[in-house]
Length: 386
Image 1 (cartoon, rainbow, N blue to C red):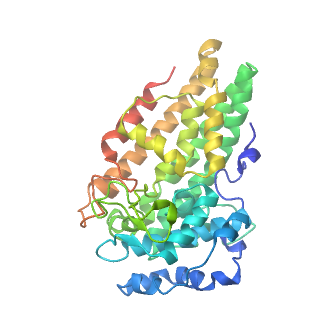
Image 2 (image 1 turned 180 degrees about the vertical axis):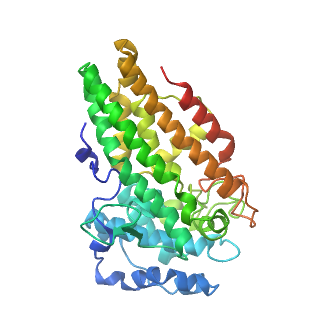
Image 3 (image 1 turned 135 degrees about the horizontal axis):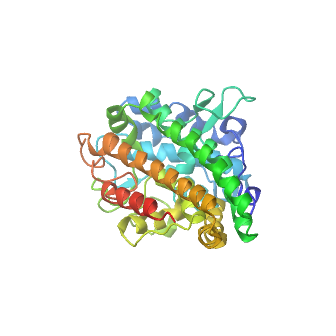
């Protein structure tokens, strides 16, 4: 295994190999780009649907099928934010998405083999740029390009994820090397890699710890979270969302999962590497379902890692105490990451006051009763040391 086979690298991991601002869309996207750039202004009017309904219906069927992948991904970011704003930008959710939004995003989603709404890849992985192009992908040198209302809290929430993805990149590269080390039964190499990986996880967890620095739980719940929900298990859309003009949906409401950090591929990759297994429960079913919302090559990376990694088996069979300690220390690092996620879910969501249909404190943006199962998966993770 090598990262380059999966549109990944040791410096960016799952982050896009391009920067959003480097990719120009064709001129006919002009009205769409203008609306997306001014989305905060449109939403502040209180009638964002009025403005978005005036956008032209771009026939992207042929373009989306043939255009460079980078352009399609940038167009997906633009349209997915507009779609989310149309659905959640006013007090009541609509039953249908107009054809001028529904058809273009469906063509883009078909090309990417993703669902036609905002994915984690569009919210985080493709939606960033560096202020200093020669500098690192770090919190003091990146900005969120496309947003909803904007502001420090919304930007910081996304940029923490961007920084985590960048910091995890070397870990993913080491995962490939660990697969090879285990296959070669190279105890010394595997131990050294795991010890280095442990330090990298310290960096990742330190970044995650900084979420409260500039993203307040109340502001997140009231001004960030409402716009990233999906249409599944959402009382504001009991029959799903109709995509007008999209023939394959036959006028029936669609129930797609909303953007969530659980669509990040980092933790599933670690579960695959360390051969961590989770019991069947509703969250595991949900996480398995979310796999289809990831970029295609990232799915394949997780699948191949799960199939090829025998690291846990090797660490047990080796009988080497140092290797086992290094293995266990990294399993604990992932559990620590999961613990912080659980704590944030409690403070940023579960403890907040609900704001009506669609922003439930008991249901995640992906549409699940998250609190009950996050702890269970963390505990299962932690219990599988050797």
